[in-house]
Length: 301
Image (cartoon, rainbow, N blue to C red; front, side, top):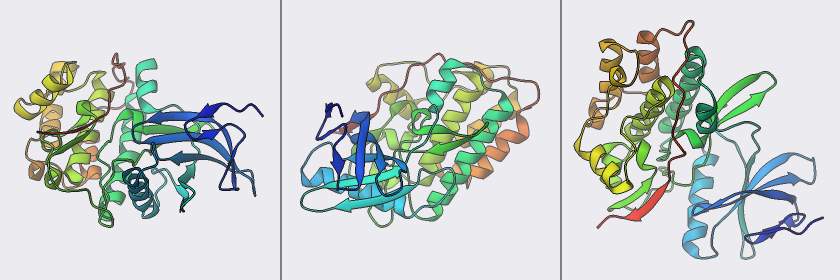
């Protein structure tokens, strides 16, 4: 096989003697991902390795595995196994066949009824996570795979690299991580103790607004200006971005309230409130004209 190097692994190389690396999938600050096959049964998986070899890199992957291992939901990527030894550290996840939601939104305007179904699937996943003490902290279209199951597609939440859980909490203090375009005000402030389930729900509301209108709640701005806008100014209303009335504005005003305590008590409550005021028949969403939003991880002075 061709020995195409990607980080510490190569195409055709064996990982822990159990997985054959097929091809690189992605590489970033949170880790390196590879398409792979489990030798004993031919199951296709995604193998994730730390970006570096230091203790913090291993701890990051360990935390991700702990979060995923506590979850079992059809709209959350499934953990296959996690292994850490002196010689290796990796996790294996199910392989999903399909576009990410961001790619789909830029390519076509989804029927509203389909968008609302995807939102309901993601809301159910978030409520499942939150009930088990897991907060994703980076809910965005690029972290949603529209997994194909025959002619049917299911929205699946992936990439738990920034997740916190009751078992492995994040370090308290001021640290900014996530994707600014989908950050809630408390996350944009960078104060860990303020980040919780309501933060994920705010991000899902941002996705909902973008799905319905094709536009995000804040204009395209340099990162520092965008963060300041999120902290200091209210998001744009649906009626400012598309053909929606005051009842839709009211639902999003609550879903994206500056005070986390004023938001809906669950993600499903929020999505059902949106479903109740957005007519789904014979309408299509706005087509997104944005590029993928960058992820940020930086200390806040």
